[in-house]
Length: 342
Image 1 (cartoon, rainbow, N blue to C red):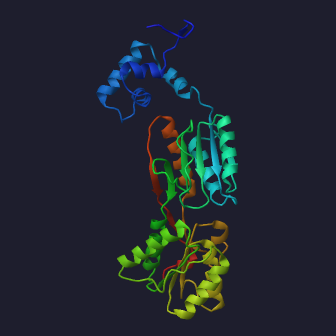
Image 2: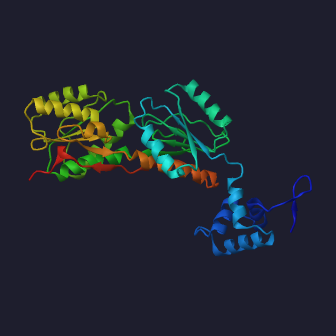
Image 3: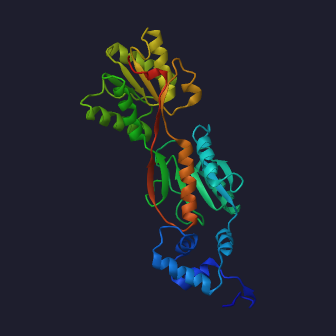
């Protein structure tokens, strides 16, 4: 079968031609020709027969899949310090493949007007997709559904449930921290957190209470909310121990807070971890490994978050639609601040 273009010239068959002839989507035709398991045998056979009928070959498949692609992806962030966006960027680049896809990094600095400016610039560059990275895990405004490329939200989920978002599971992180303290023999556990307006602070506290309830225990005092700083960690732990000297485990909702806790415990002559075990959050290595003792912490797996976000862009480019927020697992990194009692 000879196919012609608009000027009447012969042209090679495309994947779209195969899909149309077989009566399937382009994504299904691609899977069938590539031998992927998700396609029913009868459908695969129909696609292969259509490809043979119009002389479509696999090397033409590769060209058709790349047609119209620029090999570039935009990463739009509001993370001023790069604390979260850098590992997410590294993970995304790992997934895209070195040298195969270029990533343009744009910092909106938390400004909506600047964000729109960068968004227009990325679209003018004809990027194949966009990953939007927030600086906290609170839902952020959606960019809408009128964009010509797929958008995936990472770390900060979109406030639109029909968008694709990936974020760390902070509830599971709070639970994991308490379960570790319990495993080291601690039973009188307190929780010092940051700004209560942050979803991360509230979610971690939910995990804390759930893990203690499962163990038949209650939190010592109430969750101590204030700010994400070493200064608050020092002040809060001083107040905590003056009111509850029996505390033998403290979960700090950030490594910065945990560093302040360690300072106060040292000033008060309380040994870590012999008298009080301390665990932080974020696994910020420059803080955690330079603490004395080194700080046990919950790692949000940000590089894996970046890899998953990149895969979701690939999925959308392959015309496989999905939506909703995906909460990704976090992990425990054990160091000297929680060594189990002998």
